Length: 145
Image 1: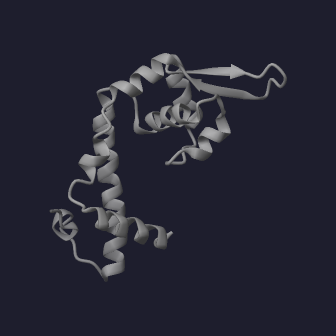
Image 2: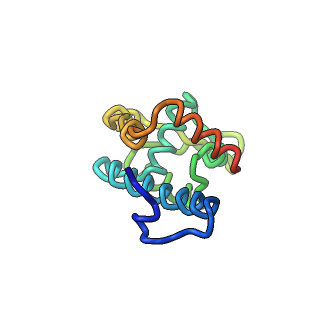
Image 3: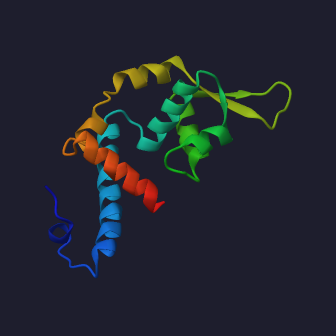
């Protein structure tokens, strides 16, 4: 099991500082693991999130709705969607009534990609936690926010 003090060769002012730094360190560790996992599929974790949002919606969504639903608020969500469009994973659907409104839908190619991606990443990241510990961690993070 990891020990933050050993991992970064540091001492901490108090437990609260250690907890905060541990959250940041762990978030970066998770991001690194996600980037490595999704690289094989030619997408980023944020692009995967967009595809999952669209699949779950079961109907085209406005770009702003997608941005609002993203786990990681991304100022470059439009650029992420541009790349997904180029790869034919999503398509933009302009409104016939209001040209300012554009909805986005997942394509069959995008659906196929999601089907091809194993859903074991989260299990792997959380393998060292028992169910009760995961619930406790989630509650503590909610309390912090």
